[in-house]
Length: 106
Image (cartoon, rainbow, N blue to C red):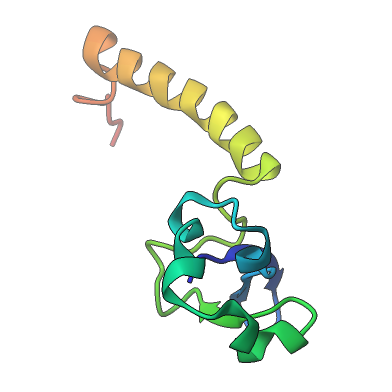
């Protein structure tokens, strides 16, 4: 079931994912043909405000989950800043050879 991030719980170190009742809108590519195979009106999660809810802990999936969810504006802003520093580090490493053989004093 396709879900969207719905916040980060810092105390429990987990992300919350909700379906936001996307099946009623049928706009996401993965669920356009869902109405043909399933009876959406019998879904038990339609009674809830956010629909289906799942919690994922960061320590269970450290490579997949971040405190700042991927695809958000804040994540993209951080990613843009980080890529500039990574480009400069690769230039320093390849062109100037500073990172490959650093000068070590005592």
